[in-house]
Length: 210
Image (cartoon, rainbow, N blue to C red):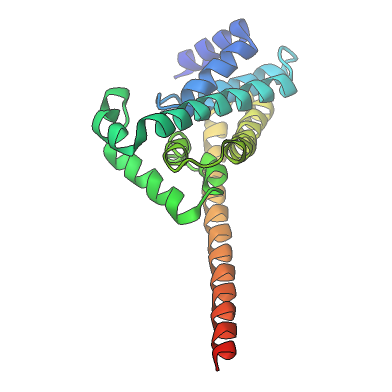
């Protein structure tokens, strides 16, 4: 594992921001490439003064947005039936499409933001957005913000902990758990809030009908 990390650090260092952009494009599309492999070494290189944190962030978030737009176009142009039938040829399982589509339908356009922070959802949430023809501007804004937060987290870990792989894994596991709990809490809050609004609206209609 140490050799792989060293190879990635050398690759990112050699290719610079272009390498980060390409890696994050792959991670954000259907290709199963972990974002940690690109952004954490970039943060480490920034701590050594060999790379700009701002430049690495823009390359990472920009690559994530580009990969997400690629998936969005796939969903928009090809449709759900085509992706379910032929998705396995690009490592996309039908059950994965069902899962992210259910997530999108349940939580609406904002899921393109929160979905970027959740493992197993992050890479594919753009597909149902494209299938559902979500407005491109809203999709791009939500996606860039969500991807930006995730890139910033990984860059910070790489910057602070550097080559301490075990420490990075430990902190990252805690962060993912916190993010998942936070996302659940936010959705629960808005569901309760919307339910109260609906109940108040129905009650008002009933009073007007009397």
